[in-house]
Length: 361
Image (cartoon, rainbow, N blue to C red; front, side, top):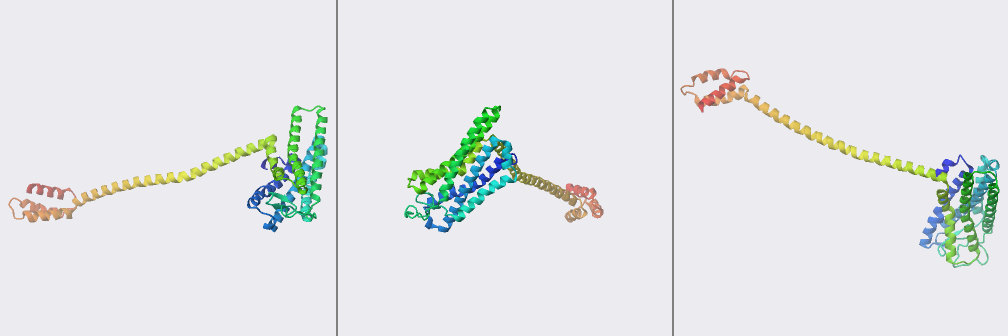
């Protein structure tokens, strides 16, 4: 869808393909997922009448609208091959939107004025008779005439379009054309043919099984074809359209690059705070150790300063004075002591104290 959006301005067929893609995605949710869910639980119409009715209306709208747009796409490719000037006159500008609005209005009108399909868990598919499998519609009460008419007209015009496309292509092959242009036209035809063929076979089987009792194998095949009507276009585009292949490859590379950058940024945002935290703890431990060393040095310096203070010296000198007081030979100590205790902090008091102490020993 992203690739188709990029190419919408270049060609009208991409705009038609985009609308088909939107309807196809919506239809797959019901034709694929919802059908599997209801079949797994064995739902029938009476299990949930309102829900199954609206679901049937939606899948009917998707079928009528998408198949009609598919026919318009085939016509667009056929006219484009015949004459580019004619294609611009028919599909260019606002005319294209008219072509796209018509199928939508048509689909809404059909589900409004006719009966819609109902799911049957007995046959694992959608039928107009909500009681199929246990009550036959003998009086054709649930018969919808428009549905087979729509499918038969779709088959007829798709076949006419295929034949016309082949005739125009073979006719133009007789002219002077490059091999590259011929190859591009062949690939366009094959894409339209493969996509439309699923519509053709699905329409044929559903017309057949609505009015004729068929076995379960045919019903399952019809359901698979209906699912591929909405699911096969992306496969065809990715395998056969080089423009879409190139855009998807570029988008894929850009997505991987974005994821890689996001992962790197996420990894960086997760690791860097942890690294900062580790560095902070390391620096804090170093600072703590430095603080401890500073405190130890301060304690040592404080102890040294305290040892040289007058009050510390005077305390020890008092003790020595009491010890040696009155002994002969220490008269000079008493005289020195009286002057030492009044000195300011310095080395004199320490020297005096040390010398006296050694003398006593």
